[in-house]
Image 1 (cartoon, one colour):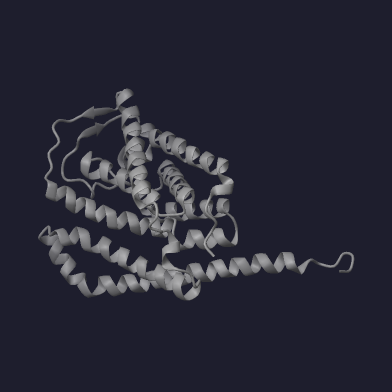
Image 2 (cartoon, rainbow, N blue to C red):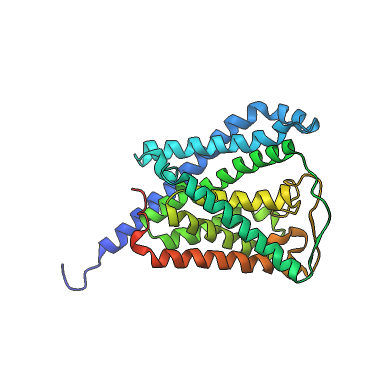
Length: 298
């Protein structure tokens, strides 16, 4: 090489990686959108009837349809673009029971600590006896399960893994967490702290995925939080009470900066603290186990 000649390799390879990431990301979202329309549009009129009659299908079908669409989009991209087995996106069966149990336990601990801090500060008040039916819990749990798995496939699935395999974990984590925050932007209503908290939650879930290489851990962690916060405690989830069952176990009243105000507990500094602590713990675990972490899928 001549002295002073431009190093074209340094320019070509980042360009190729960026191009590969962009076209795969765009293709994935186009597929997801088209497939989502395929499963939603034919029943759009029925959905209105289901909502009017308070049918369980009105709650379950949209989330189930979204899950079907993203599973199909992921399968197409992994099978025909990346030429790798579908299970490598995070569905390896070996540690399912362990990862789900750990995720549910961590999710319950995360929420218990969050509500416990609010309680200790005098901002959470118990409202009385729990009143719900098994059928209501089952219906709400099914809708949350479908929705959570869809969100985890968006956050920790194909896009995250595509970025990670062509750059590094840190960049994939930051970009995916930012996208996760953007997906929830409609609920923020211009508030900054809820956006920060959702970004931190995205970091937490991506770190949980990286620990095991499977979706079981972040999905069960996410499920435990949403299920306990909404149907069980009757609190606001991401600025909405749509996951509640018409009652409230705790009344959260206190400084909006700490308790989240209208957005709910997830929009306050209490959850910033608990989410940040759990995310840091998982990231430290990753740092200490660097050589044992599963490699990015090819």
